Length: 340
Image (cartoon, rainbow, N blue to C red; front, side, top):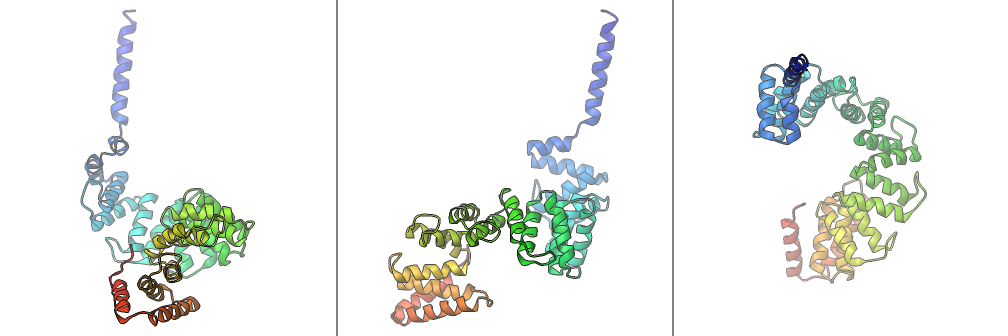
């Protein structure tokens, strides 16, 4: 027994040394959520040329975690980590160039850094590089390359990549148009709570494109997206309530969803609110009707010529039935209105 005790003590002592050697204060600070500690430790590591510390310090400056936001400092430290060939830092630096944060906006530089990260398997960078190819930003527009990078991202389970690949299958750009494949990828992203994918998966059921036509399923996915703030989905939820599709007709609930979409600048919802105030599905109010018709005229994009013309005609018709004072009040509300 006396001979065993020193061995036990030595083993314990060596374990203590190993624990100290392999302790990771930065990981511990990240787990604890102590942003001030994360910033302090990241700065110490970064100044010692540790790439993880440089990356974390860059993120801290970018997102104001334990320090005031400073995009120039964020870009500086992210570049140092990126120069160590760290894919997370390369992806983040590419986003800084893409958005002009802390550096001049430069899509070519963004593409270069996204590519470095994408080639190391970063699903996020693969998605962003695919978008640049799709839009011809910083690289020559190439739908085939866009589809290839988006597929790489999607197959790794990245919700943005899955959504983007679904969009390409709908449009038929870079890959054959295939609504069933589009719906499959929209569903994968939708199940990860991606609001635009939820909306598009709802459209697949609503339109019967890639899925059997099913108003109840469409409403289910529209609502999920709408509750996350997607204005197109909010408009569709309102429309479904107004027209008794997949849910019992309820003008009051319809108007609430239209209002939420209209407040974000959705022209279709603004037009429908105008209709409801004019027709009396809401308490009849020509001033509010004229306000919403006028806003719809402003917010309909030029490509939606027929809808914009319809809103103009409705606006002019209602204005012709109002007093000058009522028209002036409606136009005052238009001038004061701001998207939320």
